[in-house]
Image (cartoon, rainbow, N blue to C red; front, side, top):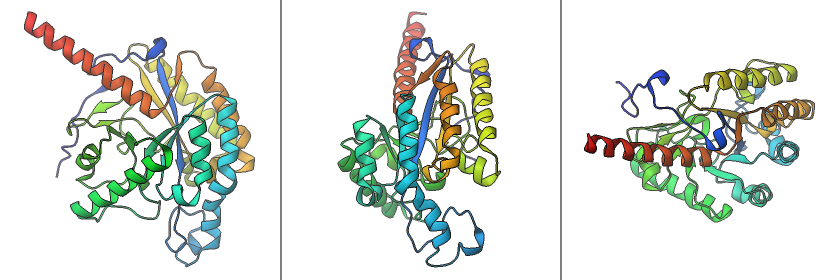
Length: 299
C-alpha cells in the first residue's frame, strides 16, 4: 500500500521558513529519557546475552543512563544554556522522579515517548492503543505539570491509527518520520511532523558504527555547516538525538561538550526546543495561509 499520512513535497518547492531573530538553523537536543523492563530484550551492546532473563550485561549498560550518564549530560547542557526536548517514557515518572524534577527546574520540553522502551504499540488494537496513549499522556502531564505537545514512539514505532489518536489527545506534532530537514503538515488535521534524526544519533554513531568521540564532533560540525549553507533561502532544523547511557559515558563527555560549544557559538543558530519549533512553524504557516487566502479573494 502507499503512504497517505503525508504527501511528497520537494524542499526546493516550498515557501521559505524564517526562524526567530533571523536565525537560519533551529537546533534542539532530543534527549531520550527511558525506562527498560528487566525481563525483556531491548537495545543491546552485546547480542550474545540479549535473550537471557535477566540480562545484567545489557540491562546494566542501559541502566547507567538514569543512574550516572543523565547527570553528566545535564551538566554539559547547562554549561551551554541548552534546554532539552525530553523524549520521556511515562514509567520514568515512577522510577526516576529526580530526573523529571531536574528538567522541570530548567523549563525543559516534555514529549511522550511511550510507556517504556520495552513495549511497542505496533500490534495493539485501536481501543488498546487509545487506552495506552491516554495513560501515557496523563501520567506525563501529572509528573511534569505540562500536557505533552509532541510524540515519538519507542524505536519510532506507530500504528496506522497513532497519528489520529495523538490529535484526539491534544498533541500537535510527532518526530517519528525522519524524512525531512523542515517541519511539515501531515494529512491528519492538526498534526505536524518535526525533524528528528536516526543518523545524527549517538546510538547509531557510537553503537551501530563504532565511531569515536572526535568522529562525533566532526559529524555534528559537518551537519550544522551544511544545514547552515542550505538555509540561505529557507530555514532548516537540526536535531541531535542523545541517550544518556551512550553519550553519558565518561570517555565521551568531553566530545559532547566540544560539539555543543560549536553549535552554541555558531552564527545564525536558534537554540530551541521541538515544542518551540513546532509552535513557530505552525503559527507562521497559518498566517501565511491566511494571507494567501486574502490575496486570492482580493484578486
